[in-house]
Image (cartoon, rainbow, N blue to C red):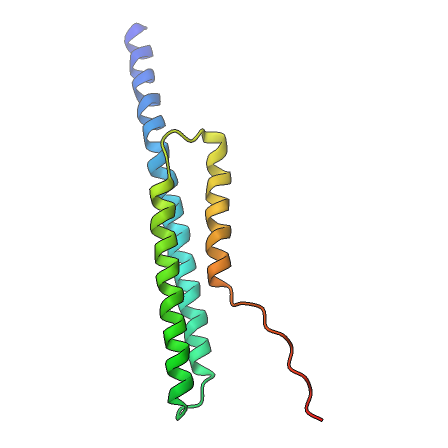
Length: 118
């Protein structure tokens, strides 16, 4: 009986140590999904540019590169912030907060509606 208790205690300690790793993996999966969504949005944005408009294309590509770098910086910071000390009950909140931060970078800024020509 004592051996069974020690074995179960060892398993629960291992599971407790892996929970931060699991949290990190879940956040990485969310980051991959968000990176794909950003790439899709950016490629659709580039398709709207007229083929001969090189100036506009360069401006868009420069802005998109900056967006990509900001997202990669945020992803790295979020993965560093995953801590083994975070209580399990707060881990879903931590993941939701990370997703909200990424969503702010991925979604295009709101644009004002264009006025109708007179």
